[in-house]
Length: 207
Image 1 (cartoon, one colour):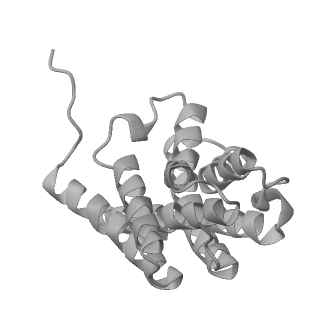
Image 2 (cartoon, helix red, strand yellow; image 1 turned 90 degrees about the horizontal axis):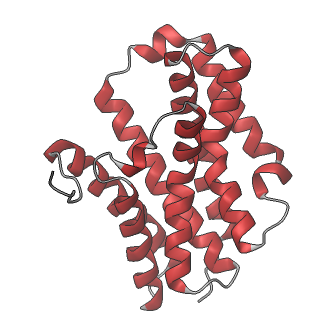
């Protein structure tokens, strides 16, 4: 299956990178890291998922290291938080959660689309979309020495996988790629937001 919309994927990547860089920078401030730590955490949160995806599909060197726009966008998000932390802190949690859900949806479909461009099988493309969405947050949590949020939080990786799966299903039915990209991103976004609102989570082993 081929996904013919490389420029659209780059645009989605850059928007998602900015959102996740802001989140990573805010996590760095919460952990009382210095400016370098803040930049490292913002870069990792925003770009690690895409780098992992590119390494796995053989897109070397990864786009995040080859295209200056990726790093520049991540550092711009970090600079925004460092320079205007008081303003960023006034943003309500609900708004930040919505922005995070939007970034997750964008990364999930962008990662899936790029995997399809590299002739990955549909199922693997879905998994790579999920990795793109949650990889940066996982690396962020590991750097902060805590259990990755994706392993215990409300529906998160599941939302990314669901959005990617819906996108791939639509492409298999020969629906327009741009349309299915939007549908997949929106599906991921809605599932994430509703799961937080309704306190949904995956089953756990009872103790």
